Length: 391
Ligand SMILES: Cc1ncc(COP(=O)(O)O)c(C=O)c1O
Image 1: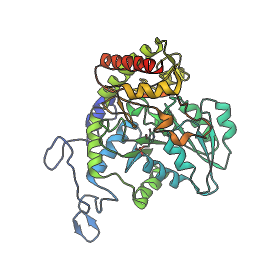
Image 2 (image 1 turned 180 degrees about the vertical axis):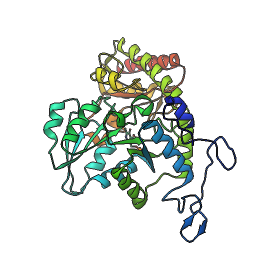
Image 3 (image 1 turned 180 degrees about the horizontal axis):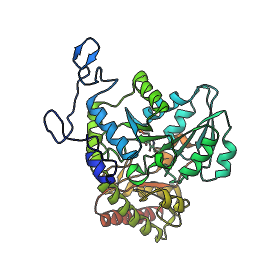
């Protein structure tokens, strides 16, 4: 297998883990659906694979492709799961025991709260991850096993300083997990900044075409990697081969897609800022967005997610989201098609009552790769429609 460690991200996205099939020369890794593999002798598998929950060649290719992107130089493993939440669940079950303490950023995907706040004897404290003194105060040395951040976060686009938080957590012996779904490894590499494990909803940018549900963990080789790999098999919430194959197809274009998402999102955020009928606009690339300076140091681009709050309030937010024609009103994000939603009423219903509930007037955009002026025109007509409806 070639060494892609010094290649650029886009080269690695196309090639690492995805070399031509040695048996046939097929330039695309084959989709292997087999659930079991012939053995050459009792307990002598032909090529390490025995049973597809434990390992499958298509899944293995996807896992090494993602690991090569997240951790170009240091050896790391990828682990693929049936969904982002299945990946998170396996991580939580691996590092936590009843009585343990978790410090959770107070602005994370709604499903992550739901997962942590089930009735299982783990104590979770939420903190504002941008307040480092608050993070330090929340960590209980000897008791805090895990510090979890998502950066940029869903949906408020809060930016956490990964290196600073890792330093605080490691001083207390805690594991640092970073949900890198919004940034992807093309824009941000948390392991290089001190994180111990990266979490992905592969459903989003890695897949990139809104046609699969999957998740992944990436972790440096070592003791934690071994325990996670064991639990991937023991708990069994693995990604199926076809989803892994689709995810690899998505990864091949990750570099160009992220560049397109970043360019279009920047244009839209700057356009929204000028609108009198729009209040706060958040995009990590805007100097006015809190966290911009940290984002500029730890990210190589600011992503494709933008949020804004129409001055007309929650009613206007709903009206805009229901009036777009190029942006589809739908949950999820990270696909080639632009999506719009109102998180408080859709993806983040479970954040109600949390420390940082999502404002009811917040509109979230997942900016796709359509012609950006078509997207701008679409938002223009939708905002005009919302204003007319309010009159
Ligand atoms: C940031 C983030 N993390 C994790 C998840 C969970 O992923 P999945 O829906 O693939 O289970 C989501 C889903 O929206 C997400 O946005």
